[in-house]
Structures are given as C-alpha cells and as structure tokens.
Length: 565
Image (tube, rainbow, N blue to C red; front, side):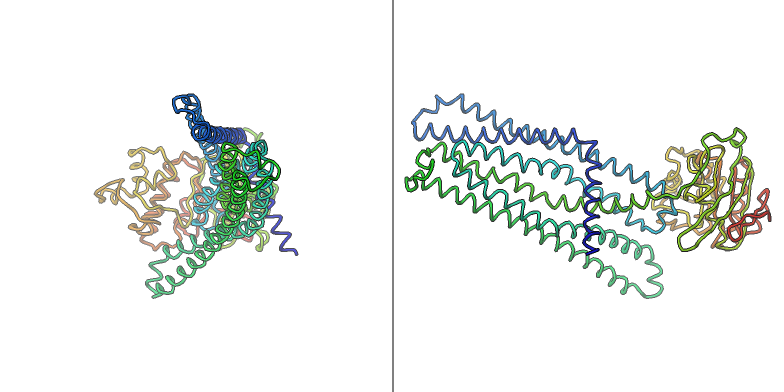
C-alpha cells in the first residue's frame, strides 16, 4: 500500500513539473489549439462540399461547368486545412523548443549550484543522458500531446454535432463508441507511465555502465577482464532491450484497442446508412437519408475518431515525458534542500574587498559528521597560503566552501567582499578534467574567448612551451580523453595553464602534485611558484614541502579545526 502511495505521489509531482513549464508557453499552445480547431472546421467544410458535389453530379445531373464556384470553395477548404495544419505545427514546435531551452538552462543552473561535490555521485554519462535524451523526451509532450488532448475532446464533439444535425442515430453510434477509447487508453497508460520511468532509469544506468567500461579499457586489458566487461555491457543492454520491448508492447496494445472500437463504430454507421439508403430500415431519420447526407456522415465518421487516433499515437509521448519529469523533479528536490547558511554579507565592510574571509565556518556531511568546526581564515589579496594536514582533515572541504561548491551549515564566507561562488575562481584538483580535442580546445574549456597569443603565454607560464613546439599542429595538436598523449605532470600543467587564462584573482589548488613522481612534480611546483609570484591570491592544500616554501604562511587543518603551522 505504501509503494502505491509513493508511486501516486511521484506521478502527481511529475505532472506538476510538466504543468509548471507549460505555463510560460501557454499562448503558443493556445495558438496551436486554435489552429487545430480551424483544421477541423476546414475538414468538415471540405467533406461537406465533396459530398454535395457528388450529390449534384450523380443524382441531380448538374453539369460540371455549373459547379465551378463550389469547386473553388472546395479548393479553398483544402488550402485552409493545409495552412492551419502548418500553423499548428509551427506554434507547437515553438512551445516545445522554448520549454526544452528553459529546462536545459535550469539544469545548467542547478548543476552550477550543486558544483563538482554535489554532482560527484552522478555519472557524467547519466548527466549527459539527462541533458540530451531526457530533455528531448519532452518534445513530443509539448509539441504534440499537450494540444492533442484538448483537440481529442473538442474535435469529435464538433464533428459529432455536425453528424447529429444530419442524423441523430448515426451520431448516437459515434458518441457511444467515442468514450470507450480514452477509457481503455487510460487503463493502458498507467502501465506505460511506470515502464517509461523504468526506461529513463535504465537508460542512465546503461550510459554510465558503458562509459565506465570504456574509460577503464586499458586496466581491463591489463587484467584480462575484457570478456567479462563485454558480458556485463551485453547484459545491461539486454535489460534495456527488454524494457523497450515492454514499452512497445503497451503502445501496440493501446493502438489495437483504439482501432478495434473505431472500426466497429464506423462499420455500424456504414451498415446503418447503407440499409437506410436501400430502404431496409425505416427507424428514426433513416428514411430521410440522401446520397449527400449518407456520404457526408460516412466521410465524417473516420474524422470523428482521427483526433483520438492521433492522441493514441502520441500517448507514449506523455508517458516518456512523465518519466523524464520524474527524474528532473527528483534532482530539483535534492537541490531544493540546501542547508541554511549566511554565505556572506551583501553589505560587507569595504576592507573585506581586499580579503578572502572565513568566519565561524561549520560544515557537516551525512555519515561523516562534522568535518569543519569554527574555522577562521583571513587571507589578504595577493597572499599565498598553504593548507597542510593529514588526509581527511578537512582541507578539500574548506577549498570547496571557498569555491562555492558546497554550502556550509554555519558561518560566513566572503571572497573580496562578495559571497563565495559569486566571483570566478581558478580551480585545480587532483584529477583535472581534460577533454578529447586539441590543446586549444582544452584551454578554451574554461576561457572560451582566449586568443592564440594568450594561450601560448599561459602555456609558457606553465612550462609547456618546449612540448608545444614539438607538436606539428601547435595548438591544434590532438589530445585524447583525460589528457592521453601527455604524462601526468604535463596534463597537470596544461590544466594549470587555464588559471592564467581565467580572469580570477583567487586560485584554489587541491593537492596539485598528488600522484606524481619527483621528476613530474618539480615542473608543476615551478609553474605554481610563477603563478604565486604573479600577484594572484593562491590557497593550496598540499603535503609537499616544496609547495609549503612557496607559501607566505602555512596553516594546519586537523580534525576540522584550523591552526597556525
């Protein structure tokens, strides 16, 4: 019972999420609905004119030359139908594009707020899946389903009233069969929603699973585990395939239900009209049927069910959107529970504009307890400070707070008079991110407007000029993912060169020499020394004695407290 209640709450939350993003584009959706209703009116006019022309030619024996004006009216109805359909598609696509653009913008904002620490538990492949596939899954809902659900009500009602005007018995058959279709579609749709949520979850897992195996391919080859890894990927892909097939099975079932009732209703209407025209039925208005009214009703009967058919075709769009919305709502709920903190005063004293200040800082992590407690740190502009201490003492957590990656529980942080995270910060951790591309691509990763001259100067400051000169393509020389083609020290210095390109007065370095041998460490230390001498404010967490000598002062972090070393 509890599981059912949670499932209902998740569905309700996903629907609310979709409605929230629908409000800003309501005018476009209303325009699309108006165009769709105009299309229905044009369809009725077109079919009515067709039936009337056939009646006049076959029964009334009117010459074709006398029917030029009605024929021109028919052509206008066909043109109006095409134009209204094009207008509907345009408005719906604009609504969908705006929603997807806004969702991606909001995702970027939330990822920026969460920072590297908040996103550490999420695979980059899963995030990429959210950014591309799950946002794209919203397209069908806003471009097709959102207006079609209203058209599925208004369209059949309008056509049914026209049929009622011609023959109430035929209209009765249509109105009896019409409500059965959405009823069975709703029953089938409950399963489709659950399957779509599973589909979203499994797609993210498969993406992360595959990416992890690709990144670890060298290690897998060294330990002879490639066949086992291939088998794991095959099993994950097979699970994804089974969920896809179940989703398709539900989609085909909903279409079969609709087609059965639609075909049965149209067949009954056709039999009624046929027997009425032949004189075998004299019940109700059957005796008054003419070729015009009978043909008009027969032509309208499939159009009565067409909006419902289209709704069934797009019903899986709703299920896919609900699955994606459930994922996004989960992420928003995690991000909407920030810990209460005064990260900095908007009216900080003027003297603080020349300082990085941390006052009475406290930070806790779930499962770890208090990692920082009552930390006081005042760093003057241009000063170089080294944070030393054992692993797990809180050095990295303090840097994360200074960068704005983590919101502390208590205390305040100001960076040159501004709240932490509001000013750009140059950041380098133990595992700098290098992408597959050229040297220039990696440098522009954090400085998109950097010019070649500035990039060469940054590489020179990082001690990479000689290595760059050895590259035939220069800045366009290719690099593999995570800096393949460079040694560990060279990759670290390439990432350090970004700090010269970023317009930031504060540089935060988290164990920049970790994992490097002595030969590789020395060029990195020299590059950091040049950066410290440039007048930037540098705070570095380190165990390396050579880096401590570069600093103006050293502070010791131990068990969450800060002491003078």
